[in-house]
Amino acid sequence: MNRSLPLVRLLERRTRALQRQLVAAVAGKDTGVHQARVASRRLREALPVLTDGLHHTKSGKAQRKIRRLTQALGTVRELDVTLHLIDELADRAGVPQTALREVRAHVIEEREQRRVVMLERLDTIDREKLARRLLSVRQALAAPEPGHNWRAALALRIARRGRRLEKAIDDAGQIYAPEGLHQVRIAAKKFRYALELADESHAVPCGEALRTIKRVQDTLGRLHDLQVLQHHVAAVGAAPRHRRGAPDAGLGVLSRIIEGECRQLHGRYVAATPGLRAAVDAARREVPVRLTARQRSTRAVKMGLAARRRTAVGLRVTGPSRRSARVEDR
Image 1 (cartoon, rainbow, N blue to C red):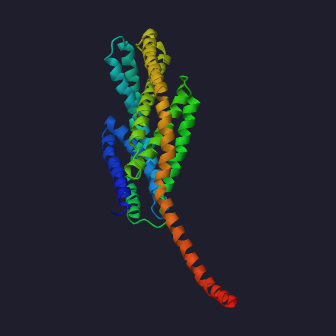
Image 2: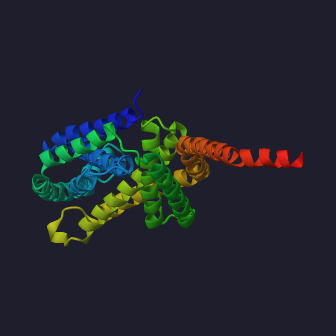
Image 3: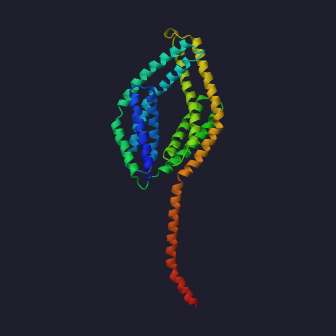
């Protein structure tokens, strides 16, 4: 089997996912916006690794267009998640419904404004040109050049991102501090994206590490989403009284309910930290070694062959002189 075939298929899967989810996002589906943003990030993550050492792929231009897609989708995705959280809270006992309805109206108004901006930004991106550039990348992957070095590039990325995640975990400590936890979440997401490339390309299985990191990332993701909702509650509370119907007491109760769940999620994260540390340490040490094992083996074989050739040449050169020396000794 062609060794580049898994890479071609990986690129094709991620390209199709982005195209499919973009259609849903433009149609106004909230899940489509979220999934399209995830798909754009995963494709953008793959391009610089898969094309390392290849020339004339137009990968850089494709990455810039995909980054613009990610940014355009991000204006709406966060508010979609906030609305889902509000729907969850609406079904709970003890939640002040008047305050919740006020926050919902505030979020919906902002979402509609941002959706207009999102569609305008998406219209400025030439998706046909992006498709052509991704096709150029696919063609280069299908017939790679001798300098294609994606394994080493991915190994370096995994090692660096693993160290950054460990540092973020150390910096966050066990204190409930939103910014520190946010940095852990971002570092975990980037590390997971890199490991997914090793796993999905069938180069190195990373299933166990990915599951551990995903569980922690989900916990921190929900924590972050609740903190965003808290900001919207505060924004409604900061509006003049004559412009809102929710009393301050109701908004205060709502904020405390959200804060309580944030604290619970933080406790869950702290409990999961030892397992996360172990998974990150093992993955950042072992996966890069296994990724580059084939290259080291090939290099060793080449060096061995070169050494044998040098030895053979040396014997041919020194052979006659040794025979002459034996004749003189006689």
